[in-house]
Length: 380
Image 1: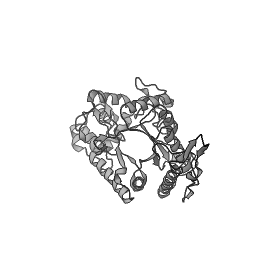
Image 2: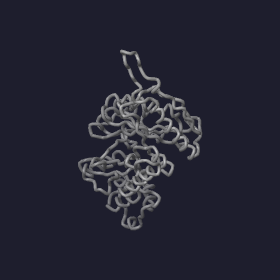
Image 3: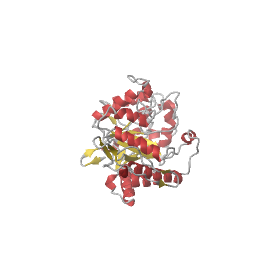
Image 4: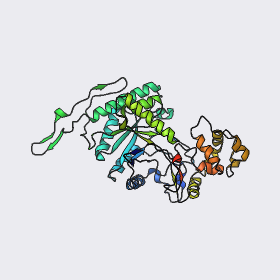
């Protein structure tokens, strides 16, 4: 997004390989990077040199994906990963996902405040509810109804923010001459009791350089938008056109207005998955190599996006004239219009998939600074 002429960029930091499940097999990639914190630190330092403003670590509380062929997409543990990164970086923000469904607010407040102090004021919390049954099973629970999860989330954020403020800015005296370490009158319990969570406080952590960690949101739907409008400083959005990005951004701004906040406090970040190389063909070839094992299984779904019946035998052929004449963008998938646009350019089915038309963010493909504005998903 653009603020006073400057674009604010964040980078998704995942499993040590990249956003494609087969990237662990790519040339030059250490297949052991899944457990390498050193690799994560290297990527973070490269992002910092590249002027990214923050790292964003999603999280998933269960083993996910086809691990027979693909690597899980999530880092081993977000907070421990960012603790390692915090000691080796100086400027870049550190945003980790923390579930309000399967954490107590005191734990969340303590962990994120400690990261904020450790990083000299660079921590952010992506506060999410969890709706995955496999994740719930890891905590011996079932998924609660959506209204209950979002009510718990609101209570958790309120309690965490109160705990972060339980030390006044001047509470920590550390005066060796008088022997006073801190002023207990300026360190107060919060004594907050909600319907689902509660905490007495205070935290045992003094204020950080930024005062409190910032709040991010990546949830969707009415409940997620309301939560972001009330508390979020940043929103991670999933959009597929410039128009959609602008509409979503305005919707979040309106949610902030309804909550009595200045809408400029909420920054909207639309996701991109760029494929960069010296030429478009070279960029597509890199994506083709990464998708060698997964593209065949995606052919039928691409067909459903276009209203066609496609099978793997057409993987290395373009759509026929009769198929192109019959193709229609599915109204049930917002990525379908882009898939149809690429198909009409005459690419093979494999190359259509290499354009990222089924990925969870838009995929501009080609040399840097050469992408058409219509293919870029950030919002002004």
